[in-house]
Amino acid sequence: MVRTILELKNVSKTYQMDEVQVQALRDVNIVISEGEFVAIIGASGSGKSTLLNMIGVLDSPTEGHIILDGVDITSMDESKVARIRGKKIGFVFQAFNLSPTLNVFENIALPMRIHEFPESEISAEVDRLIDLVGLRSRRNHLPTQLSGGERQRVAVARALSTDPSLILADEPTGNLDTKTSIEIIQLFEELNQKNGKTILLVTHEPDIAAYARRIITVRDGKILSDEKNTIRRKLK
Image (cartoon, rainbow, N blue to C red; front, side, top):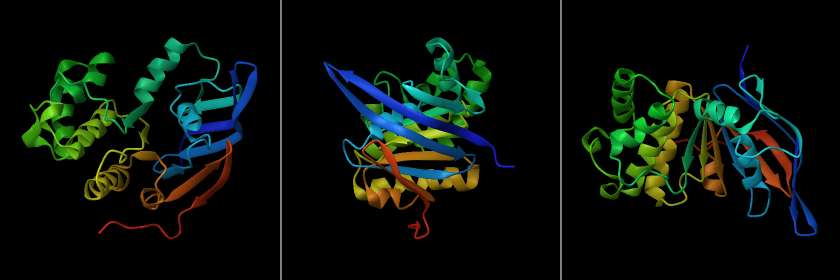
């Protein structure tokens, strides 16, 4: 039986803006299973960003439930949610979000140190991840000494460091040129196919979403479509 990593049940989100209520999400239902490669796509104002916050457990719904790796976290206090989120979800951001004063090794090790992994385990795992993303020669470089693609590879390795159930990539190619974007998508493809990682990629670019095996389209705070990608673009 395939394990469910994340489930949103009848999730709605309403924001109060002065005297106006804005319904950003409306009765959203999503199930992400282990081993999937899913793209979420939507235009600006579609509710995509709010949905990202729900999936990443960065915000709580006005209505509905969020179940992460079998645990309903909807009513948990923020400190417990933060601990669970830190171990269960690895984040990759458009702007990389690397610490400028830490080198490649230290940036990747940071989540493991926050979660108090043994130092001997950190050293071995970070070196493995550096090799996995092809940055052995950049091990001691600072972010300012790296290209955009290399920085994103560091961000991917950092997201993998605590062995999370889900990798959530928020516009991971947004700051990259076309060639580098394809290299990063290829890295996600390899992580999904060879390492069995569950990938959820949020993008506004149809050309990037086309590499996923399932595409969820968001419009006006609702799921417009949730379909298997039968014409998936394949990497050469």
